[in-house]
Image (cartoon, rainbow, N blue to C red; front, side, top):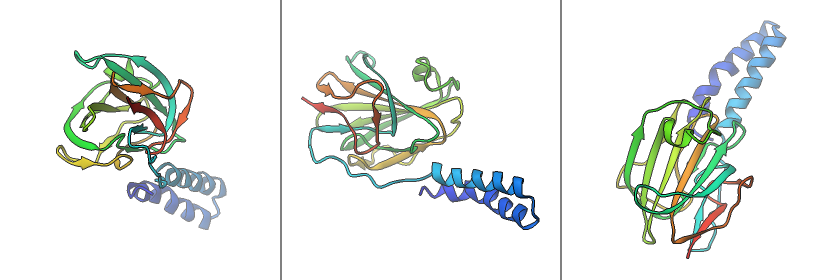
Length: 203
């Protein structure tokens, strides 16, 4: 459980028990269900990264929206986009071992996370990860519902594959940019889990 979950779940749960005590059963039921859902949303299950040294894992839980060839700046590569519904785990994890070389916050709009323009126009954190095999970039992208993106690591921090690095509250999107020197092993429509599902492998 992410610690913030208790803070957000406490008000509806407390009010729900008060409503139950005064026999406002419908109100109590709605508040208790809301509190239970908040606790469910902030869950943080254990994940075991794969043993393969060349595997790049998913930075987020969710459904693969698309895998496309796309340059990042002047560097050719691939983009994998993952959509997180409100029912997915929203803790984000490092896709590979490396060092956080740059963190860029970009203010923006709040289009629905499934729309392609959300990748470039929505509010987002852009995380640059320097690894021994090459540079990776992943984005925490706010959606229509999600209005809060959190990244817990400072620039210069070393991370290991599958390590918890941040969270997006409620429905959202995560994009992962990879250089050409990888083999993509997922396809659109596939559901993936942060820290354990393999998205690509270094060639």
